[in-house]
Amino acid sequence: METDDAAIHYDDFRLANGLAGEALTIPSANPRNFHQAISDTGAMPGQDLRAKLFLPEGPGPHPVVIIAPGSLGLQLHHTQIAAAITDGNIAACAVDPFSTRSVVSTVVRQVQFSFAASAWDVLAAAEVLAARPDIDPARIGAQGHSRGGSAVLNAASVHLAAAADAPKLVGVYAAYPWSGQQFLDPDVGTTRIRAIIGDRDDWCPPVQVQAHIHAIRAAGGDATVRIVPGANHSFDRTTPLEHIPEASVTPGAPTFYIADDGSFILPTSDTPDPELVDRDGFLYAIEAGFGVRGAHISGNPELVPVFYEDMMAFWTDTMLPDGST
Image (cartoon, rainbow, N blue to C red; front, side):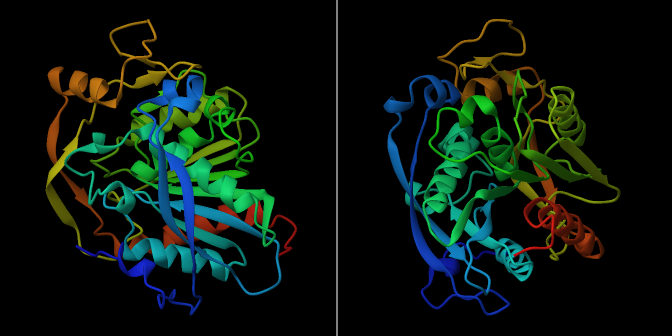
């Protein structure tokens, strides 16, 4: 399995286009759930993260895309995505949510840190980037893959964004996101949303992603979703189709909704409970018979260009609508 999470932090690491990155420290947090992140923000334990910022040629200030990886952490294909984004005259900031949390992978156990923490990481990175003179604070977007896709969608929520000091994200590109957690009120304000997922994805149910995006649009958001025929999970990778037997997934499980104050609502209840955490939702899904071991990843090299074309069309139109740099 390809791995690049350590190499990207080397001082001499360069993208395929030759760009060197600047090492950043992102002061983030470890909220136990969305309720703590939204309604008891000061109680969140602090957590520094590592990140690498890649700036395109030119003086700036540049638009920037925050890259949030999935359950396998930063991988080679994330650096290839950063290269494509910077080739489009947009900066890219790859965030490492794992190393400083002493996490290697969340494939088997997603609850090593909360999904609220993953979303907060995105907003924390946006806050750091907005303070830089070489970054345009009005053009900060976020792209997430799988668990990272869930993170960027939740970071776009007006309820979570209001609790942070970060600027509003101008755009969010959710690549094969897990939409098992969604805000009951899906308002994302002015953030433009795009999701893309394959119809063969057996890790993150496409039907749940469709429902998520259509809920955002029904609430007045600028949101679209693309279902790619014949594509598996993580189809932006060129590696052969791989079955990960230890993967813990819950296809078909009902959505675990989030109230405005961040409290979770169990699928079998109408009552928000601020004490509920991610584990409660997963336990419900397993006990209800939805738990499955094993899922597939990659294996669609002929569809990689489809992903990149869609991604860059979104970011070019969102970040550089008039062709500016």
